[in-house]
Length: 359
View 1 (cartoon, one colour):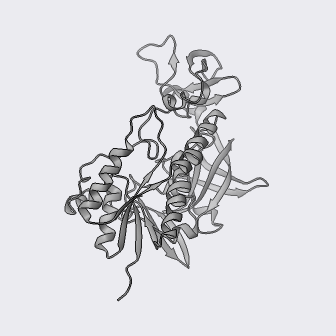
View 2 (cartoon, rainbow, N blue to C red):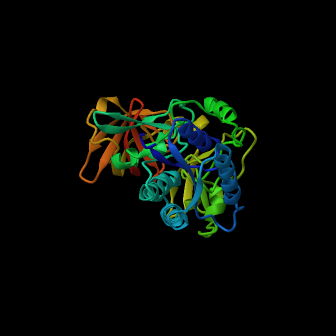
View 3 (cartoon, rainbow, N blue to C red):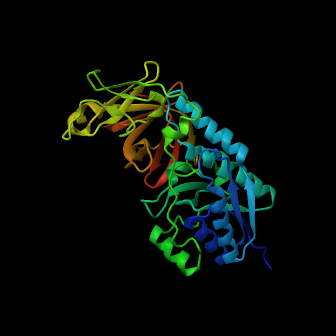
């Protein structure tokens, strides 16, 4: 009798990971549900205990083993401390990407393999396929829920031990399966916000580690039109959290287009009045570019996302002395230093890197 492949499934207490667990058990795998415990600040509600109970109820419903893996130190160091240091330097990091890299596909995967697992599985909306002896990371069937943007750091070794059971279905299909399997998470709302910690106001979160530092809000003519609480708190594209003085009910809605950490100013514009001026970025430089399946040379078919959920933009990738440049076919706006640019060839993730400069 053939031995069943052993899979450790990351169960977060949500519907996606619950259905992933149920599908793998139904498919004949030897499954274990694993709850990843991470660091949480003492000034936020303690949600992890309830999420753990939810994950335990799912495992009990499916009659599969359950365990908890403590990732507190790694999460604090690699995700939270990194995020704070990046904001302090004036950049805007993407903590979900680092959570995947260092926690889910770092600590979790390594511990699973150490304990004899053949694979780990998560509830991510993405797909892994093997072509020409290479593992490829692909967008999920559900384009609205696709999470491939957050997974571009995965290596061939990591992908060879990874399963994404819900990547080949839509969210409504996942919900229907949750009902079919009788899962207690079937009607649970989707989680939002920072990976594991949940929906938090970033400024409130950061203010526990960085002091309020009032500064000026500028328009495109460098005129002072308002005030803010510290340039490092703001992200490019943000539409709230600053005060515009002398405004009327018919004024356009402003959003942040740039920030100057040294002078502690942010510059805002409106799509209604300043469209031509804000769509001005033709090129970006990136570092730490990681190719998922090896170097990709067919530039003509490349597209890029410079933020999650953005429509993919046609582009050209060029090797430089210090890294890589990405040139856009059409001018872009709202690009934040420190975010990730993720490259695609149709629905395949080519790779990605951290945005270092905009031109």
